[in-house]
Length: 192
Image (cartoon, rainbow, N blue to C red; front, side, top):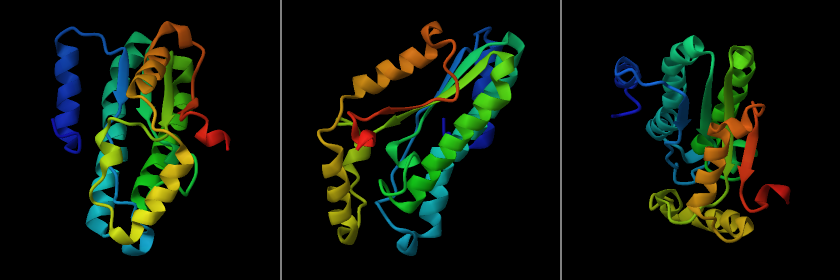
């Protein structure tokens, strides 16, 4: 489905629930880059697309799953944010703002639904190898040096399995008292 189509996202959640499936976990993990463009060179169309995929879709899917989790009085929502959601100099303007927004969504949902048995946490990856997001071919040559400089600070790219393991922990009962956490999975990049 096209996660930027609000109606399609809501319909998909409804169809899953109508099959009798429990909606125990929602993982909002779609994300696109913005070519590392700063504010002055970001076209509005690019801004809108990045916000639609990285932030708006997570909100719509979260809103659609909440009634089902509220009925069950349990659930875990896990957002894949980014190091760019924790500081300002990791991505282009649209990507960075979208990931800061995802951090805000995480904290707001965690706070608002904590007494209803619903948890919301975010994993904040650093550079992860073997994913298309690090192979962004849309980077303007003028911004390429900035991109290389940022990624050199990150160190060696991480393994996607480390993200999957963090998500699995946050989805499990092992993290029953973990709520509203922004978990960097970055090999120590954020510690510097």
